[in-house]
Length: 435
Image (tube, rainbow, N blue to C red; front, side, top):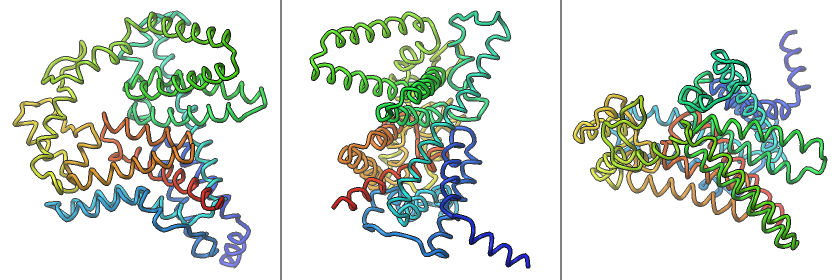
């Protein structure tokens, strides 16, 4: 009786609705809880398998498209096992990187219509999740700030060490740059909505969302996120200026230039004595010079990125062709840090903080070339299809990878694997249908 009821219930369930909700919630929880996000990603995998194998509803495209996806990164992990000293331990890399193969394989078998719906749900989920996470973090931040002073009495302390960067994102246990990546993509998504939306009321709502996201960028206080945000702002103003020039609206163009100059002056004068300004000037200069066990602010002594990158490059040169194998980076770097006297980095077992050096150390030149091929072919496709979100997504990965060992943390793996696959296949499917 119970089995008949269960079968009847399953027949009534619209499986793709389940996939839509799981997709939305996977993206929604990315900026809130990676564990919950993974639960809904698994639900998406299970629902897709049911759709393909039980319902027999699947579609196939060009199989070679998989070799522009994160499948390439998973193949790199498999090949890395051949040079890994402890292959059993190296298998953990395959386990951690399962999304790199599962996401593109599953998205590949969805129909064009399904992929476009999945893309829409991902965009909405990520944007609303980013807004909610920032509302939570901003509320917590302002509460801790005003608990020691009169309400709405602002000073430079609001942008201090204790209210930005790690302290800001600590409540949700998220690395500032990883949260910043979600926020930056959300900003691009919302800007695209504003450009396409004709109803004024909705645009006011989108502008409010944009304000919250932009405020979040300020308190996240990650240098690379500031750079990406700056690129977006430059892109917007350049587009508006060209539009004014084309329409010969020179007065409006002049006013816009004055507004830009005023905004730059206002921001500079208000943050010049804050921790935010220190991070993008003094600390950045410190990071890009060779510093060993020196102070980069009044509180912390450490080794700069340049010093660590030099040590990482020495490790790479030991096995330049095929690398040291899976999960070898931290062990190999620890030995080199000891030789180079980088004891702060040794004690904290820092990785290279550069995804290109990380791949070069573990997988050699061949692994590095595979990574670069994956990134630059997708950048090419994004330009070819004039997909703004797609372009910014891969531009963001490339730039964050310079300063972080991105793609080695679960928060980045699922994000890049799922969103990257959807961007790739949604655009390629459109091209196929147009031919």
